[in-house]
Image (cartoon, rainbow, N blue to C red):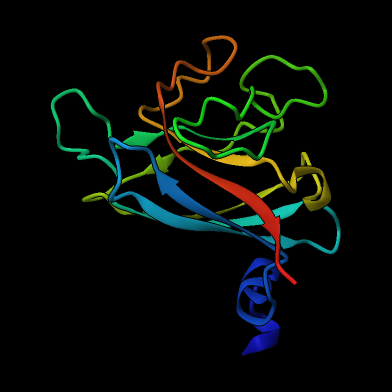
Length: 161
């Protein structure tokens, strides 16, 4: 059975993550918490698994249930998360092609879980940077950051030993 499992499945089942971000909400979202784990992929890139609890109510009028998620330049998650800098963007590209532009989170009753692969950076390049969750969906158009609203949660990407 193990040999029939895809590479990413094997990595998640049989490997230990190499880094983690413990994610905590801001003062308006104190019930928001979760983590992101980061796995080195042997042919390059990073597999990222994110699990978040306590996202704001996605049933509010006008809310899509989607939340923007990005890697920001600096790993300073002191509230109100205003010291995280801009999106991680080593190639100086426009949004949504920054290396720090990640897929959105989709909340169901305040819970979101996702796993995705990103080949635009290595794990060593994003250590000590921050993973940010924004209040709204990223529109993937507006410069420089997708009009995704306030930073509602933050976690520093740190190595696991």
